[in-house]
Amino acid sequence: MSAPNALRDLVARDLAPARPLAPPAVRALALVPIAAAIVASVPALYELRPDLPSIGALRAFGFSIAQAIAGVAIVAAALRESVPGRQWPLAQVIALVAGGLLMPLLLPGLAAQAFDVAPPPAGAVPVGVACFRTSALAALPALAASALLSARAFPLRPAVAGALYGLGAGLIADAGLRLWCEFSAPAHVLAAHLGAVILSMALGVAAALVSRRR
Amino acid sequence: MCEYLAGRIEAFDGLYAALGTRLRAYLLSLCRDSSVADDLLQETFLQMHRSRRTYQPGRPVAPWVFAIARHVFLMHRRGSARRVRFLERVAAAVGADDMMRDDRRALADVDAVRRALRAVPADQRRALVLHHVEGWSFAEIADRLGIRLNAAKTRAFRGMRRMREQLK
Image 1 (tube, rainbow over the protein chains, first blue to last red):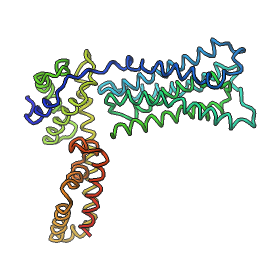
Image 2: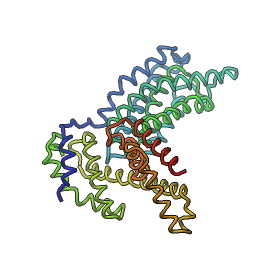
Image 3: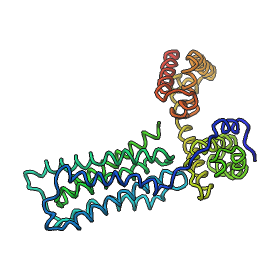
Image 4: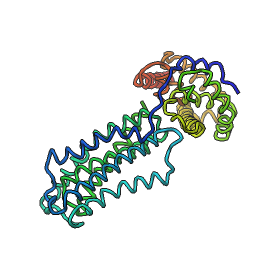
């Protein structure tokens, strides 16, 4: 079977040497400096969590760094999803998303003295809003970088790729926030921290769909 | 594939020879229409060419190409659904009920649609037909016509408005 002349001519006219993209895991390494900057900048711009002496620096930083690494790994998974023929099976996409969403739920408890450290009732809403806003804003640089990396490939399921890199960016931002916020009460964690991660996922989906239409 | 990435057209011929038959059979199994399968095969190779840098050397070529082929089929199916909706809208506009009752009037209506389409400026008509009839996305139309995305949308929109005015 040989190519029709019209197709062959079209391809021949446009056939310049093309350098293949690096493997997804290698491309995701571009996100490491951004992740490090986000994790370092949140406590640097505000302050370190006040209960740091009692929980220990290793525990506080260790869990945050682990979550940031998980975030970069999920972005790598999104970049793999963006390559034709390397899409994740649905079960693995669900496992990745579920695992990713569990991290901001579990880590506050693991990195705090108890699972129910709550802000004072009068300050619950302002503290929640501050955490949500800071986390959502901190996710934007990682989200933008991931969106660019993904768009350079050819995501055949842009919504899936976008959800994954949005989740990764949200986890990186939340990892930084955990060095500032000491609260682990379920209401605060769900509304402020998990909410920001879910918003980041939604922004990722929107970014991927928009970049695909262009 | 690596030679193709290096820019050798003979490598493209080799890929077409090696994968064309299998790809066509695959596309035919999806769309069940021989002529559509041929079109989709060409579109698959074009998409493959455009996204060739996403191929990772050392990995098998087939899963990469077949994923692109499946995507091309899904885009075609989405475009077909859009085309059907457009035809339904046109049918409604020219009075579908009357068409069923009166063949002569139906023919006149179809003629009216043709005349209305002819009255649309050529550049708008092209964008209109490519999007609403052939099911191309605006990004693909912009690519094909060498215009900006917004220009493609505007042309199709203005063409549709002009056609509606003609049909009133």
